[in-house]
Image (cartoon, rainbow, N blue to C red; front, side, top):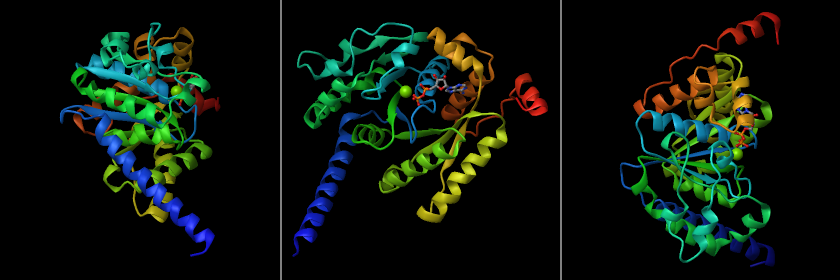
Length: 299
Ligand SMILES: Nc1ncnc2c1ncn2[C@@H]1O[C@H](COP(=O)(O)OP(=O)(O)O)[C@@H](O)[C@H]1O
Ligand SMILES: [Mg+2]
């Protein structure tokens, strides 16, 4: 065999080994009771609203009577705690210490949501090597005892940390905005996960839309591509309106579903939570007066 062919074969074998390992880890680290749902929130492009959806959905589900645990799994760019209203004393990283257990890192967040703060900073992220990650995953195994629903705020894109957390989930919410770049990156994520045939429970959430049609158009664009190249289509869970209330709440470091309950973005998140709990289609949310002005005057 030529050198190049051997190299390629090694690469393929390595990949297969890694894939098998990822799958095993997925099963291992959320060794969940059947009743616990693990929902990963991810995206292709960064900055599209993962953290805001994770935090606000967690609060909305908790207010609907669920016991929710939010885990900030965006290793390196963790920032859930900024919106959770309290300073975290410990983080996922502390789980790497032998004498630190799950209970030690779980904090009380807004509205009774429990949360585990993430690992911020490039250096910290680099220290989460393969062995460390396995240790982390093992200790997270008991999470299901703490919650009916576990929400994972993962990073964007397709690096190994993100993929492993996403594969560990039972459901994946893929968040995008209607921007072409975000849609293209969302497609890349669907493509990557479509190889894990048994883990295709992905639903799209379109964030920052100006009207409902924008959501339908975005999903259609993604599905035209997935259908053509992957032979599958992906369901849409629903949408969140572009809303200044989100930006204001971020500045106040509060979840917008609490800071501005009746805003259009909050009403969307409550409907998304309801849809997740009932399995029914998200009910339409009216965008309100601002959107009327937008349509009328174009701003
Ligand atoms: N529905 C929305 N309406 C208005 N602004 C939004 C909305 N969703 C997100 N944003 C803005 O985008 C920023 C990034 O959101 P964030 O949730 O931190 O993204 P990610 O976690 O994907 O990086 C927020 O701080 C906010 O300013
Ligand atoms: Mg984030």
